[in-house]
Image 1 (cartoon, helix red, strand yellow):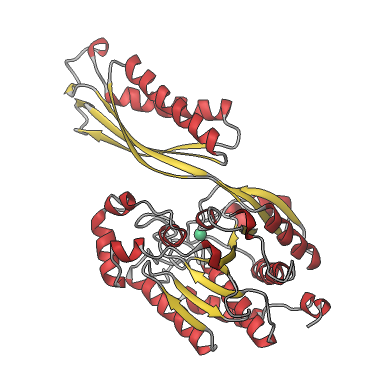
Image 2 (cartoon, helix red, strand yellow; image 1 turned 30 degrees about the horizontal axis):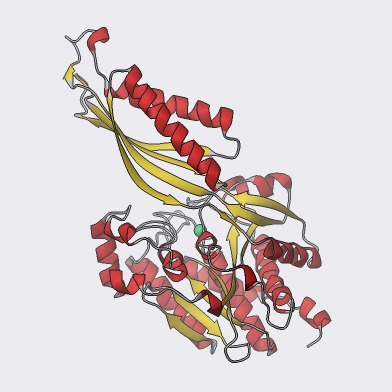
Length: 426
Ligand SMILES: [Zn+2]
């Protein structure tokens, strides 16, 4: 087929819409969102639906020991590498319909269009739904397992708790061993592409159609416990108190100032604070807080980590408190492949869509894949920048635009050279 004809190929937006609406019914909440935590009943039902759709369309299907579900199209020569297209069908608790779902359905649609057109590409295509992107259990579980970067410690002490993980694994027929055994040889992967809603307001505010993602922030989390002396709140003078709340709160306020002054592009969040014993008339003897911070660069993340821990120690000393520091996990920042970024931008240009380059402040499966193969990601606008909420919304025209950019990026990737080879550096 001539390139001219390939340039005019588009996804079937009626079929994509029907899929989108059908999927949004699975785990639907009354307020228009979805509740599909990883490996829960609704998530497994969504996966069964995805498998049925793929098989009904005559696509291949595969699943692996981490539960990742894939529709497959053998459109390349025997032994050709696979170009993965994907996202996730799980959601945060009471989340939105677009996060993850749009990327998986657009990937499925790309496979169908290539199949119907009978195109022979230099790569095979696989539309993959990664397990537990959202972190109900571990976060980026399926993609990290596939990339071979999953730390066994994360399964032993998952952030969602071991019981939740064990129950999910039992429902899905997975084990720690099966999950840790799914690494794919990078030589079999041509690369990875993901379409996702932005989950921020930069595209909407700028009136731009498509975001070409340059990199994905890394993040690090700690549980910090400021320890003082629980005592009578009425009879202990202000000067004599070892009040753990003072250290925890001063740290929280100072952390914000530190990041705003010295870390452009970085963010810090204290998302939870637990007071012990926790009563009106007792000076807090201990306050444990959940600290998370993010940066697009590994060196900056390292510096931010050192500065925040130093600040915590300083504030503990200021208020005469002890400090316990418990590391909870780290996800490395990822730079996305410059050549893939350029292909996405060309695809958007070819469709007459405006685009801008931007980093992602949210974590995505693409950061797992970026460690083993050329990976790229594109965003479409989120109205109001709202996400992880039933109010999450992306205009349908933007969803269609994103799916067409995904399709056209695949076709451009495929004609780069006869081997579609971007992989020399991995
Ligand atoms: Zn997502």
